[in-house]
Length: 63
View 1 (cartoon, rainbow, N blue to C red):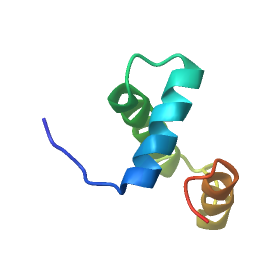
View 2: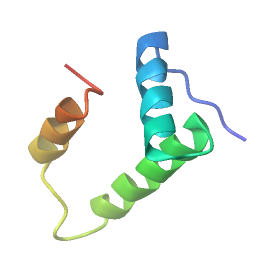
View 3: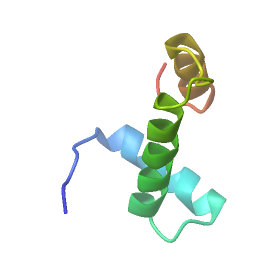
View 4: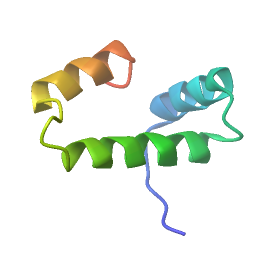
């Protein structure tokens, strides 16, 4: 299984969101989010890059 490095502060946010959303682990949550975003990327009705950035900012992933 592949591993991706992220900073500790982001990992803590992911872990907290995963727990609140009822995922069994942060890994499961991240895999689900990545699958969803990859599916959007292949969709003609996918949000623009700016919409994705705004969404990620709204979720606290980036500032």
